Length: 115
Image 1 (tube, one colour):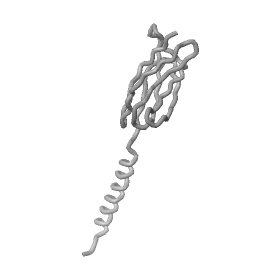
Image 2: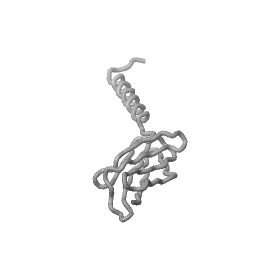
Image 3: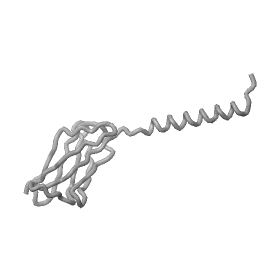
């Protein structure tokens, strides 16, 4: 059986597409994120608050700082269950337990700091 140049080109295109699709499948996210707000007891949003997420199974800790609007995001967290906490001088720390991070998901947390 003789292959024509057009058949060869078609097979080449199919092979290249298969390669790129396989690479895209491998690049799929295997992580999630935690985002939320940090507020005081009156509901006012607090900027510049140190926020951390600790995986309860692996003890992995990732940190972020709340922005001007009191919001934060901790991206690229491996799947698992986390404890999220916030610390700011002059306030008692806040903790939220059992925050579940799933593949591609974003878990939302509201942290309230008491004076």
